[in-house]
Structure formats: structure tokens, C-alpha cells
Image 1 (cartoon, rainbow, N blue to C red):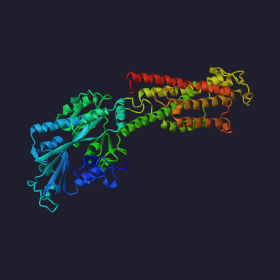
Image 2: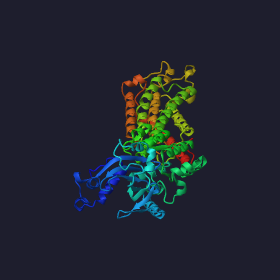
Image 3: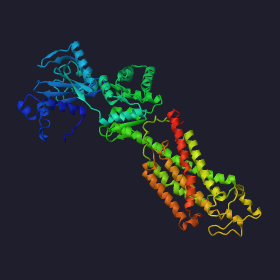
Length: 601
């Protein structure tokens, strides 16, 4: 459980294979083969086989020849150097002239033998195994590396130029083929399914052969079991050999099944990735690409979102990327997409709340001026409303949890703005109601509500209150300790304190309720209740308490308000609560538009 690999996973897998195979030493095999190991014997068989082997040089991997090799001195095999090679089976077979038989003798490698080996490779690849061919070259006299012993050797120049490696790796003897399973993480399948639901096309680009790539992609759910691989699976070489129009057409056909299945690119080279990224961007697609190697850097830089591996990625890849995955897990990208969509929605929620609330304030001032009634809100009261309702609730809306269907929505167009025409209409409707309710409760108190015995006036009188002095016989009953016998017209200025208090309280409460509406853009409060965001509930509660403090403390004189009784709060609720019903109606219409394909434009 405490064993960890050092180096590349493929090399580690081959090391593990050696430990599984054992060795001819019966005593060593009896002690270690399929037995628990301690720290000193964990590499027992690797140590056995490598005891007399000395590495002289490494011919690094290159994509053109799809192989790498090591030049070794192995006294157990022969006195001269030996070249051990591993690489892609089809590439290794092309350069092999013989095959080693079980007894160690060499026999010519015929075309029939190559076909059998390739058939076995396809069979292993169909089981999602990454196949790797192993070969050896004993005769190195032609390249004069048979006696190579270091940089001072005359043939050292041959090894300084990677273009010479393919000529060295010729006339090899085929040893065998291994299959390496790289099981996908369990969460990857769920992540890819989430991508499909979100309308994101997943393209797998890999250096593996076509059959292996297709098998793995089917395991992951990138390709469906009955997928048309003629369209959905293509090698880098095949893509490179296509004309520009053919490439465009094949990519369009791959993208046609967005949300259903993706596509697979196998035997890909860095230049192929760049071509794919560029052409997808030319088709107005938003391209995110993952990579870890130095050669991936150009394509990572070219993509809209370059994603480098944090654990296994090179520094060059990380520098070229926009994002680095700390855990090298694809599901983290999908989680980031969900978070990104949620953040975008929360931005819209804050904007929606602030705009609709401020439209309401503007509407109330405009309606007051248009109707000619006394000012329902004093400047200091408007400042108080903005302080109480714009700060805490707006900040708390940024903590809204993701909607349940956030990953079921189609991707946004890259030119989509924060505010669409339909969204602006919704803001206006809510804002207009806020203004009407704020002014409405003010008018209602003067013209209709006689609960506390104050003098009622007609709407016409209220709209023409400035001409009060010309009215004959107008008088107002004392209220809240205020006597209007000296000047009855002060009833509309000094005596409006209760009406103004109702007006500001309705404005505050209606905006707090409007914050609850913003928990979800289109989700009903029945399915997305406010307590899903406890920060918002707390913020609104604090704002309501702060407003009550100015109503029921000496601060009331500063803000020109007065305490409200039970009847007054019923009035506040009657004028405030309908904003919930209005927004529920607008949300319902929005959901109907979305389900019928009329997405916001």
C-alpha cells in the first residue's frame, strides 16, 4: 500500500511486469514470486535481470518513429553492445527482419507472421489495452555502436542527432508484445455523462493506436457502442492528409451530435492538435484543451482555455495554459464548468436584483412627480433604503448554490451578454411593480385606510394638494400628536409621516423579497426556496432588523418615520408579497420559452 512509482507510468508498468514474470533462479523465485515483499526485495527480479547490464546511451522517443531504445552492455547476452527497443507495434514490426522463438533462436519475420501479430494487437486493443512491442538488435557493426562506451567513442556523433535514430533501429528482432491497461477513473464516466448533458462535446486525442483509443472511448462513454467510427474516429495522419474542406466537413459531422457523443483522434502529434483546435475555433466553437507535455504547449496556448496537468505536466505546458489541474482529474474540469455556470448565474442574479430594485426606486420618484402627490420618500430615506437593501443581500446573492439543472442547459453563445431583451423586460416589470407598490401604499393611506381615524382625502385632492389653501373649509383631524388646526395644509407635509413610513417600509420589504426571487433565475421558489442560500436569509434578516431599529427607536425622528402597528404591517405585507407572485409568473414564462427552444437572445 506504500509503494509508489518513480518516473513514467509506462516504465513503471514494465517494471511490474518483470516482477510478475520472475526469473530462472529457483531460490529467488520461490522466495519472491507472488509473495509478500519487504522494502529490500520489492525489485528483486528487476535487480536480477539488470545485474550485469550497463546502459551506455538512450535513443529518446520521437513521434516520427514511435519508439525509443537503450544501448547496453549485457555480458550475459554477448560481449558486444545490445540495443533494446520498445514502441508502437506497427512501427516496430515495419523495422523488424526477424523474430525470436521461445528457445531463443531467431527466424525470419514473414508477412504472415506480421499479420498475425497485428491481428493480436487489434484483439488486445479491442480490450482497451495499450499495446507496446519489444525488440532487440544484436548486430550493431553497421552503425559502429557495437563497441560504444561513452562520449569519447568515434560513433558518439551518430547519437547526437535524433534524425539518425531511425536508421540505427533497423533490422531488429521482434521479441514480443505487452498490453498495458490504464483503467479510467470511476468518476470520469460520470463527468463525461455530465458533459453530454451540458451540451459539451468531448474529443479524446491520444497517441495510442486507433483500436485502443476506440475501445477506451467506448468504456468512458465518449463513443456509443453503435457509433459510426468512420466519422467519429480518425488518426492524426488521416486528418493531416485531408483537404481543408474535408477537415471542415468531418469536424462539423463530429459536432453534429453534441450532447450525444464525442469523437476520437488517435496517433496524434502536436501539429495535428493545433490544426484541430484552430479549425474548431474557426467554426465558432469554444475549445478547451488538456495537455501535459512540452509539445502540447502550442496547442494549449492556441485553445480558448488551455488546461495543464499539475501533477504530471511539464512547466512549459503549465506556463502555456490558462488553468492547471492540481489533481490531474478530468472530473475537476467538469466541476469547474458547473461552478463557472453558477458564477455567471449569480452575477446575473446580483445585477437583476440591483437593477430591478433601482428601477423601482426611480419609478416611485417618477410616479410621485407625475401624479403631483406629496413626496413619498425623502432623500435621507432613499439613502437608507440603498444602504439596507443593496449591501448585504446583493453580496449574499453571490453565494447562491448551483441550480439543479445548471448542467442540463445548452452552452451559452460566446457573444451572449449578461442582460438579454427578455431579462430587461423582467427587470422593468419587477421595477415597475416596486414603484407602483411604494406609491400605491402612500396613496392608499391618504385615500382609503381609515383604521387610525385620520382624515381621508380624494385622489384628486391628493394630486392637487398644492392648492389646498384655496380649498374652502378643508380641515384635518389631529393624528399622532400633530394638530393641523392652525394650517390644515400641513397635513400633506408634516402629517404624511405614517404614509411615508409605510412607503419606505414597503420599498425595503419588497426589495428583500425580490432578493429571494433571485435565488434562481428561472426556478420557482417552491423548488428553490430561499433557505438554500443561508447567507441570503441571514443578510435579509439583518436588513429587516436594521430597518425596524429606525422605526422603533429615537432614530425615527432623524429619518422622518414612525412606529408601525399590527394593522400597518398587514398593509405592508399586502403591497409587498405580490412581487413574489409576479416573479413566479415571469419565471414560468421563462421556463416555457426555454422548453420550446426560445432561448434568451
